Image (tube, rainbow, N blue to C red):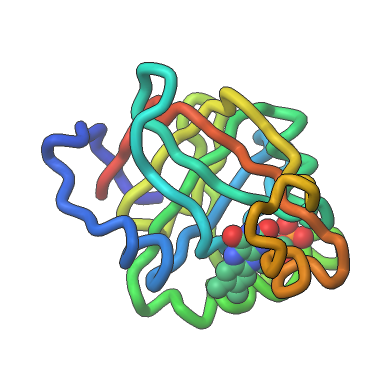
Length: 168
Ligand SMILES: Cc1cc2nc3c(=O)[nH]c(=O)nc-3n(C[C@H](O)[C@H](O)[C@H](O)COP(=O)(O)O)c2cc1C
């Protein structure tokens, strides 16, 4: 297990476009008995309702979603580039069908009971503040529905307070 230190945003140098969109992140949720993780490359970081906040979108079909909805807590883990293949695997296989955490050979650590991926360099612990199902009638740009939701597997938008930022 690695040692992490709490950091604050003023110490952080990160480009969210790169970090989320290009490098990707792992969304992990659950408890000490069972946790699940999945790769995500859509989302945002900023401010909401007086808090540092993370915005993530999770499709209805994801097994990880069940854990987020049950615990109302999740983590975002940002591993280094050499975990690219692991992230592809965790973003393709579902934990509903196999023990993908063992398959990916990553370890789960816990911070105040919230699971994270121990191999990450940077971790955000997040508390869900709102969960909003995206509905097709809300798209102003109607092309989004046909481009991204042919299978009607709509996202839920989670807006979460980042309660702790941990760096190795
Ligand atoms: C690069 C990449 C980015 C992804 N981004 C998201 C995302 O932002 N939201 C989402 O719902 N699924 C996303 N996925 C798909 C999930 O990671 C994938 O369906 C995963 O197998 C779900 O696992 P689970 O069923 O164990 O939760 C992404 C996959 C990859 C490879």
